[in-house]
Image (tube, rainbow, N blue to C red; front, side):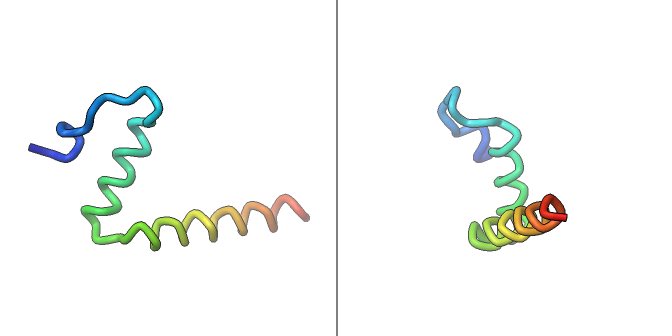
Length: 51
């Protein structure tokens, strides 16, 4: 049984985000690596918006 199948339905969870995190984990990425990726993307966006 997959992790997704064992999740209790929760209207507060975005299914796309859950799927993204499952794929990241299955690809060997840690939670911290995912956080760092989003931090770097935000910093890049912030820099672009400042220009």
